[in-house]
Image 1 (tube, rainbow, N blue to C red):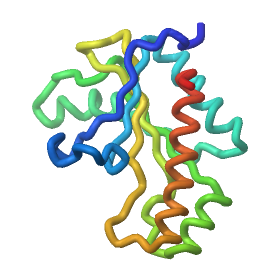
Image 2: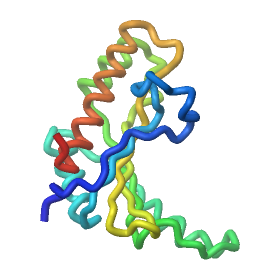
Image 3: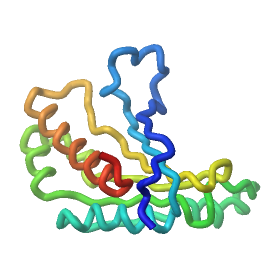
Image 4: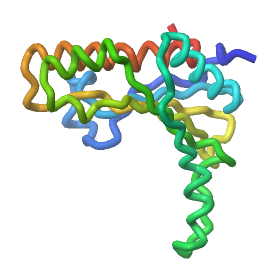
Length: 165
């Protein structure tokens, strides 16, 4: 089953209040998409979108499992995500990363790139995909251009994984 049934598409701000962003949509720190789909299909499509570009997933963090496992030790049993339906995928691109760090070595903090995929208990049929937009306030023109290339890579992977145009 593909995820062609688009429920919602949104770019949301998670860290900056909305009124501060009027007219500045491309400065939001987090990009988040949502589709109605089966989590397993979305996960497989995300993996294929990453590896199909010749990129290697360095790490797959099972955040939902970790929170469920450690919750009892912290005195809480509240579930946040569906069963193992909260994961992050970390990967890098030698070509894009080199350009980014040649522009400014301090851009090392953006590598590896991470995309999160998850469902919430409130909306179990909706799959969310999110990534942090790579940006720094003190960027040079070369650094800004290189970081835009990172963002284009992340957004291309996200859109391909969710079958968005």
